[in-house]
Amino acid sequence: MRVLLVEDEPTLRAQLRAGLADAGYAVDDVGNGGDAHHLGANEPFDAVVLDLGLPVLDGLSVLKRWREAGRTMPVLILTARDSWHEKVAGIDAGADDYLAKPFHMEELLARVRALIRRAQGLASPLLQCGAIALDTRSGRVTLDGQPVNLTSHEFRLLAYLMHRPGSVVSRTELTEHLYAQDFDRDSNTIEVFIGRLRRKLPPQTIETVRGMGYRLAAAP
Image (cartoon, rainbow, N blue to C red; front, side, top):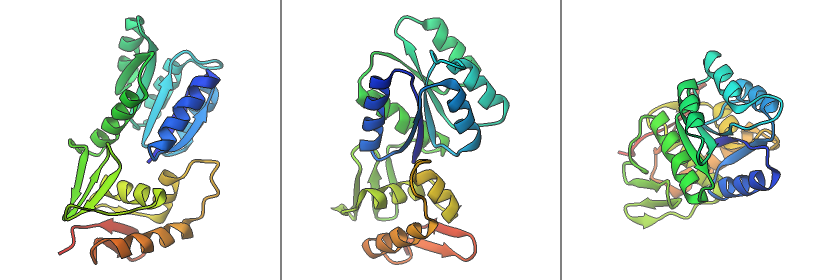
């Protein structure tokens, strides 16, 4: 899953980037509203963490422009603790949730997980596909109740597919959502990780749809 982090305070931005990356997200981070608007308008993100007090272009204006352009990615806005008017204005502008500063990293991660789940119509933090279970809170994957040891890249790939059960996902889409913009992207790498995942999961769990991509299906 790929997240855009928009925060102008360098220390806080570094802390949030590290926390999101440790939780398994591919993170693009910027410190001003101009860069944020450009990235959000042109790159696919599964969620955005957006501070409102930004230089160049304020966060509220960025959000309004995204929504007016039809960009629908879920957005979590960061506000000052007592700025209730910012919360109202942010939600009216199209934000999906808000978090008041200061906050605990665990709460931000929980809210991001919830936004991504809801965007895919999923209610539970425990994702199921047949005998496979993926807990988005702990990052644990089990098969028939037994733990499956995955690398971070394998986990991110499986998590993306499990958020879209039954849907065909192209290699391009996987590459765009699993890696940040500054990562040396190579869609052939996806094939390598698909192959590794298949060896750890039941046969036919990950189907190849000729000319289109991959689909996760409960193994018969």
